[in-house]
Image (cartoon, rainbow, N blue to C red):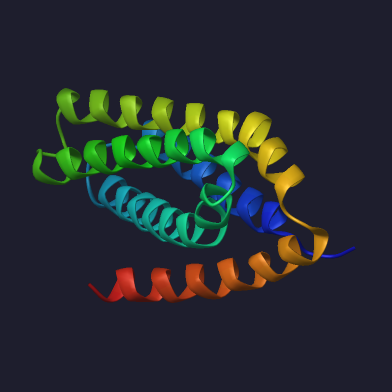
Length: 151
């Protein structure tokens, strides 16, 4: 079986779902901060590589313009929630309310992407492109994770 961009993205989507669930179940302290950091890095690395190696090529096609712009908007909304969560005390109920909002937004985005965007983009990309984009995505994702962990 060949590895496509969708296989690579689904792997990250599962990590995101798992980290969201674990974060929402976490208690105060180091574990919560560690989970939030892991989720923040996962989301940022995924979004950067996905925008470069899936959204950008799809944006170039008329049929992909609206779905790509919508997906980019949702990435921006997630970024704003994360930014807000980084400056708030991570021990209070207010922070957990923001964590729930983040989890809901992430789950909504992943569902929509897997059910709609993958189908639209799958009709635009050739099989060779899907395989090449998987390699590019995986390489850039790994580079971004490393870079974000060093910050």
